[in-house]
Length: 333
Image (cartoon, rainbow, N blue to C red; front, side, top):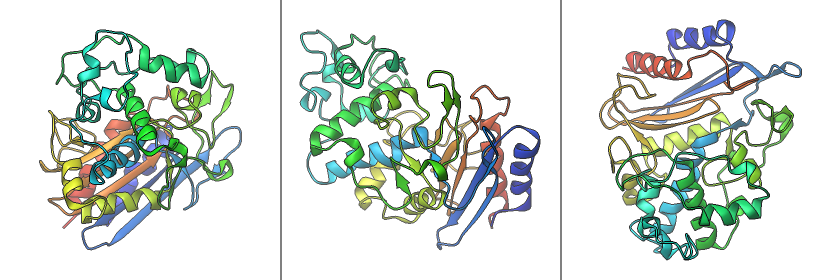
């Protein structure tokens, strides 16, 4: 199921291109699966081997696998609707300000069409309480509604919506086996030698903004094992990830190149050019990704710590992701 050519590509990435470690998992519509792991959980401060139970920092895979999914579960229960304005759930948003942000919708936040900026260094603003308050009150410059701007800030707001809807902190949400917000550092793949925190990161989220908010936020903070993330991919491929109606809503196109939770197949996307028009997936900054190709009946997960020991390596992770997807699909009968 994992062809030799795919294994060779990953071997070359680890042995010659600076990738620290990687774990690939593939599953088909009949439930057959195969995995392949290689490299290291860490190279610094000392070499540490990978194993099947290694936790990986999933980075922005938090967005579809946790935040979007939990929003859709709340929709299933009638607790909110995707076309609710943001102010219906965050009435203190932009208090005493004349801004169209208050009237933009949860759907627009999910699809990155609410017009919010992509990112800002929230971790430089102060403590977690200050960041939470200022996130709601900052006079954000907005793009026109409908324009796609991939935004961590939008998912930070969605995380706040979830907390208020459920009356729980994000860390208190129940997660399925193989997913966690609190991995054992001794069994976690290292990410960056962080200049800000002054240490190699293991078992704490790589994302600075999520870390400053206590380690968990709507856009980052989730960790997963290969088996845990592959279970999510299998649910997306075979059904059962959500109710049929909610799962269809999560995966069908809603805006140009985007569904409610995922990125749709398009020229140049991370899943490779052999994917069909119904394929979808998502990636994470640390080197993670998940892809589903329903027309070919195949889903795959590639987890890596490509930011170890630094995010400024020379490996082209997007090219590797596309090559893995193309070789898997070419070999799938």
